[in-house]
Image 1 (spheres, rainbow, N blue to C red):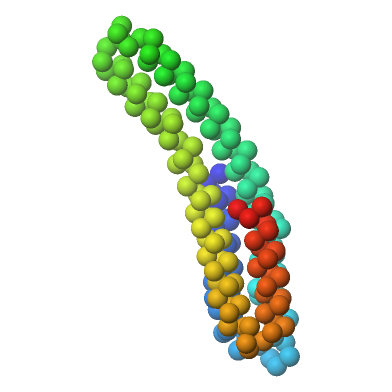
Image 2: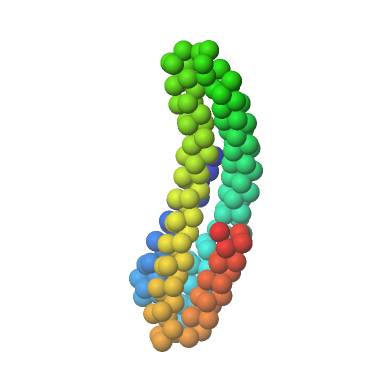
Amino acid sequence: MKIAAQLSTTKVQQTADRIKQWHVLRASANPGEEAAVWREEIVKPVFRLAQVTIPTLSHGWGRSLLAVFVGCLFLVIDQGFALFVAWDSDSSFDNVARVVGILMTATLPLLLAKEPARTSSKCDRLVDSLNSVSLNELEENPSLWMSLDRVIKTWKRTNHGQ
């Protein structure tokens, strides 16, 4: 799960870096080829992320984290019940060990959710990069700005806005 999130995060970061370098890409394009460069270098990678990478990651992570959460919940309940029942009869070391085990088990889903949260943060930065380019293109190139606006709206609707 962690590797899948890291691969997705890398793809999102690479796309965001491309967007940040749009002015360099545009300057290197031949006259009249700006729209084609825009589609190839910006629009297609963003749509590829929106159509394949992010939904696949979300689908896999959602089910996996749910399974881990349910498993950890049952372990916490089981150990909490055992701790409650045997508090007086067990040694204090056993009781402390159970409390530590409960705390570690309860935090496991949060630790696992760190990677998808990192990917989500990178996606937010990608949208920030798109918005930054959008502000510059509004005056310079209105047709490109409209295309960019569609890309931003599509991205924001991807995966229910997550």
